[in-house]
Length: 491
Ligand code: NAD
Image (cartoon, protein in one colour):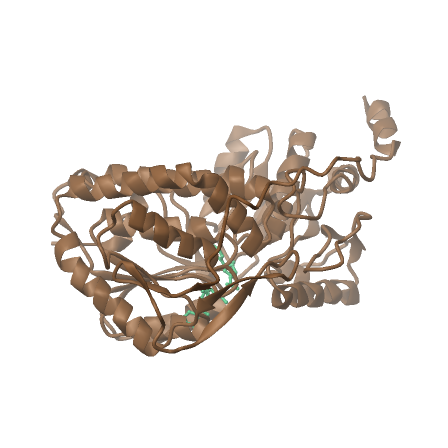
């Protein structure tokens, strides 16, 4: 067996299969030249009179102009949400459910269009936006539609009531999916919302505004104010909000928490991560390699719960790294709209610079870098799949969130050492465990300080399953029954 293994490993993997291009047509989506803000059920010109251009990170081509909401715009949106709250919160819960079911079905009907828009605006491979982002976004609305008229059963004897106006701020890595995670539970509980999409990926939110119109969401129940960090800051400062739900960086999360101190506004924070993917020597190694690749190269590593630190049991380190490099050499980097693409474009030039800077620090600190040979497109922002071996725990690449396709490999000898190293981070969002032993999975799951722990798989999501962090990864849960609580108060 060992000999066979050795022989196989020595056979060079084909560096690149010749695949005929299989581009998804972009004809299915047409963007308006310019988008206003979605306030009170219609697109309005921003009072700020300020606009910015959103571009495709894979081609640098301008896609549309989008409004940069100012303080007055944010105030108008919050007023519209307040006004709509009076009737929406008193609607029969089964009527609210109907609206959510309609949204879910329209998302399914328009899935291809929205997936293409997501890949164009954000750079992610079409096979991910088509097979992950869109189905999960629709599933989220279906799931919370089901809860809308059953809140009394979710919290028996506690008389749940909606909070009011929820200010929701989302990042650029899963634009439509994060929107669904925020809007679906808020509306199901009877709240109204003002959502602020990320500046580099506003387009699927603007298409979602059209979905709301189609689904006959009453005016003002969903408001969307595009803009940059300053727009988000105005929203958090606005007096008329009752709740802030933020997903983004730990740094901005902390600033929002400071801003809300002393105010009667409830807060949930979904922040960064530096997850450990722990591989024991008894695991099914080939499956683990797939899980490692999926854990870090999915969505270019722009994933808060990415398995960015690989902890390998020392006895299988060399074999695993060999297999991993071999698998990495088969990843196809390039056009996000090509159905064969595994790794798309980096979301923005700023993010590319951050990744490059951290990778350079890894080299400077003494880690060993491997990148499979691959041709990167000339236009746009790209970074090849990267793995660092020989990494010490103190290195920045083992400590800081890179938010790119970069994996750091460390080793351990015993389960205790694995737990200690995995927990040696200010974050605590997720972790992975690869072993054949069920008892070991259960024991590690109890000792790892992470909100989500996958066993013999990675990056699996389900609307029924709660998601959220410990420590500097934030607090509050999204998804599942747990995801209703942050949008309710109880008598
Ligand atoms: P970011 O914090 O820079 O921006 C997130 C959002 O906040 C954007 O819409 C941005 O415009 C807005 N914003 C920026 N400054 C603000 C301010 N002062 N006040 C209010 N809003 C402000 O983060 P990012 O770079 O867009 O996203 C990457 C980060 O998000 C990573 O750290 C990642 O781990 C995290 N993330 C976490 C989760 C999770 O569920 N825990 C999910 C996805 C991403």
